[in-house]
Length: 446
Image (cartoon, rainbow, N blue to C red; front, side):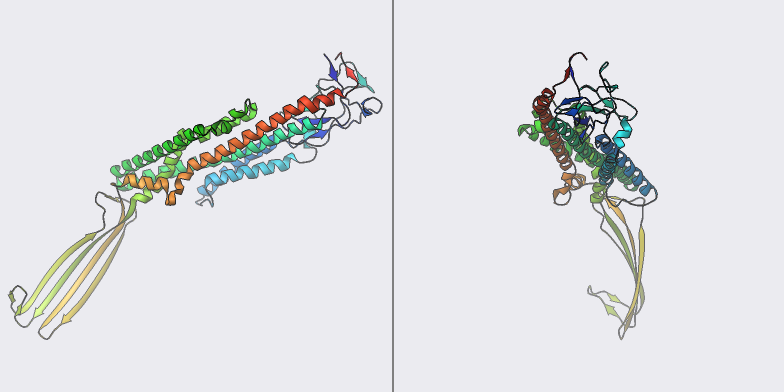
C-alpha cells in the first residue's frame, strides 16, 4: 500500500487540539523530498502545544464541582449564597474553563504528554541518516487520549483545529447551562421540601394537601406551555436546526453532548422543576397575617341624682358597675390559623375618669391582641397561578425561558459543528489532496 514521506514544516494537528503546529526537521540534513524541504524521521517532533480542548472541558467540569463544594460549605456554615446555586455553578463552569485554557496554553505541555510514545507506524525499512522515516499515517498518542497526526495543507489543519474549537465552545456552553439547571433543580427541591413541610406542620393536613395541589397545578401548567413551545418549534421548522438534523450527519462526540442538552430541555424534567420552584412562592401567596383582638371594658358610674336614659328608664342615685367584651379578627373565611410557629401577644391598658357636677364615671379598658399567620385554603389555585406567573408574568420565563436559551445554545453549537465539518471535508478533498500530490518522492511498498 502506498504512503507519503513527511516534509519539513508539514502540519501537525491533535484530535483534541484547538491550534495547529508544524513539524521541524532537525534529525537529518541530507534527504529532501519536496521543494528542497527535508524529510522527517521518527525523531522529529514539535515542542509547542496544541491547546488541548479536553483541558478546557475538564476545567469546566472541575469548576462546577468546586462551586458546588463552596456552596455547600457556605450553606452548612449558616451563610447565604450571594447568587443562586444555578448561577454559581454556571459561573464555576466558565471560570473552570478559563483556568483549563490557561493550563492548556502552558509551553511544552503537549510535548510532555506525548513524550512517552514514538511516532507509529513508521517506514519498516527506509531510514534517513539511520533514522526511520516518517510516513503520512504516522501518529503520536497523547496521555490524555488524543492523537497527533500529520496533514499536508494549512487549510485542512486549520479546519480541524477550528472544529475542535467549536466543539469546545459548545461543550462549555452546554456544561454551564446544564450546571445552571442542575443548581436550579437542587434549589427547587430543597425549597419545596421546606415550604410544603412547613405548611403541613404549621397549618395542618388540609392546608398542606392544598399546597401540594397547587404545586401539581403549576407543574401541569408548565408542561402545557412547554408542550406548546415544542409544537411551535416543529410547526415553524426551527426544530431540525436546534437538533442538528437539518445539517445531516453530525459529529459523534457532539451528538452525545447534544442528547444531554436535549434531556435538560425536556418538559418532563422542566415541568416538575417549575412546580417545585413555585412551592415557596405559593406558600408566600397563601400566607398572611392573622390578628385577633379581645377588648374588655369596665365602667364604674357614681351618681348623686336620679338619671333618666333615652328609653325613659330612671336610675336611682348610687354606684353601678358594667362590663362589656368585644372580639375582632381579620381571619379569612376558610383559612387555617397557624398551630405552631411564632406568635406575639400585646396588651394595652387604658383608664380615664369623667366627672360632672352630679356624676363620676371611671372607665377601664384592656385590649389583648394575638398576632400569628393564616393559610388561605380557598384561593389555592389563584395563589398557584400568581406563583407561576410572578410579577408582570416574568416567573414563566424561569422554565420556558431556560429551555429557549438552551435550545439557542444547541442550535448555535450544531451550526458551528456542521459548518466546520463541511469546511474540513472540503479542505481534505481539495487543499489536502493538492498538497499530497505535490510530494514528488513516494514510497509504494510501505
